[in-house]
Amino acid sequence: MPSVSILVVIEAEIATTHLIEQVLKACKPHGISYTVQFLDKLQSSDFDSNTLPLFVRCGDPRAFPWAQALVDADRPYLFYIDDNFWRILGDSSLAQYYRHPIIRRSLEFIVSNANAVITNSSELSKFLSRFNKRISVLPTFFDFSLIENVTPLSDERVRIGFAGSPSRVDDLELVSSLIEPVLKAFPQAIFEFAGTLPKGIKPSERIVFFPHTQDYNSYIRFQAARNWAIGLAPLKDHEANRNKTDNKYHEYGACGCVGIYSDISPYRDVVRNSVTGLLVENTRSAWLEAVTDLLAHPARRAALAQNAFDDVKARYDILHVSTVWAEFFINLAGQLPLTARPLGGQISRLRRLRRRLDRAR
Image (cartoon, rainbow, N blue to C red; front, side, top):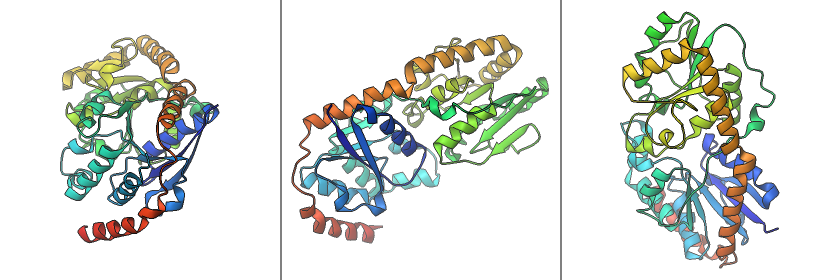
């Protein structure tokens, strides 16, 4: 069996890096091994001549000298990206960070010179093709082993949930105005928000807030344990959102939750409307109608939840999807010159580039 060793380079542990580790671990029976190293601890000794580097979402300028050194040594590397950093809206610290000229130059160099750019979004792949034509769209996945021993809450309340990072607060404007009328019409309903609250909404007895967690595995177990009947997936219609992955769909489906999704990519591409979830226009009336309909018809809610679970199990189970990822790595490694020149000769150049970047910042 062919084998491939992958060096995963990350800036920090976040949900995305945990997901990459999940699929690489699942690839092990297919000949894939991996190690993880933080960008700020990276050393030339980490780059074994038979190891394929995979930079995950690395926009930090400290990644640029390493990419330059690899290019100069004719050494291949891969880049994984699951967000459109060029199209983030607003004036948040994240948006300002990715608008900085140094960040842009570093990111574009790394993307442009990668031997393969990996993403999960067909929409994002179209955008990335302006920098690099070697784009591979690999499927998303769900690790059902994470929720095998989770016991869901069981009581008379019907939980409507959302989980996401604080950067998602603008998207929640699509659902904030329906909270009050839903709570008035359905005394058994409660809203639960993990990671962020809609603007102007405060926690109360029936509006529950949970802090954000970077640990993806813990987040999934938390979601399964909360036993949400309805999961909210609002996305405002702009390019950055259309370039996102469909993770919410398989997370909700695997946890037995009916999702209500904005009718845009990525959800439009995977959800069968009124079969495995609901696709709605981004209007208050459409969102309110969808939530109230599911609350008023428990049998329909249960049927959609079962359909979604069956679909996610069939299409997203990591045990199946990992074979696609493993095949990609093995085929790619077979085409690349992994025994190219040693990286050691590029280290002095690397140090000079680091000093220049530090001065520029």
